Image (cartoon, rainbow, N blue to C red; front, side, top):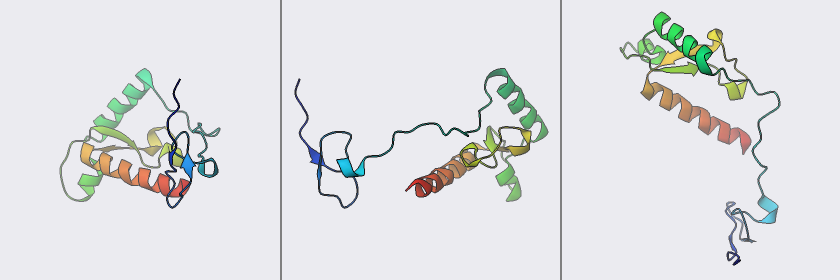
Length: 117
């Protein structure tokens, strides 16, 4: 079976050649694994019941409402992300519209990448 030609390492500033996975032997990344203390996500019928309860209690987007706008909440969001130690229960949930949820998720992802770098 043919072997791919070595390519430059994808780590910024590195000029070594990498034979697999895009990085040289000095810049290998750890394989992703779930953290041992990660919060267990609620799924299934219990999650659907929690979503219905949230949207009946608070049908408007929390962020838009704070700005004086009216938008229907369509996403169940964790105030403190599960990846940052938040709980998956009623005390840590809020309703957001799609646009606010996307913006919040993007900022959390950027913050997470900065933490791991």
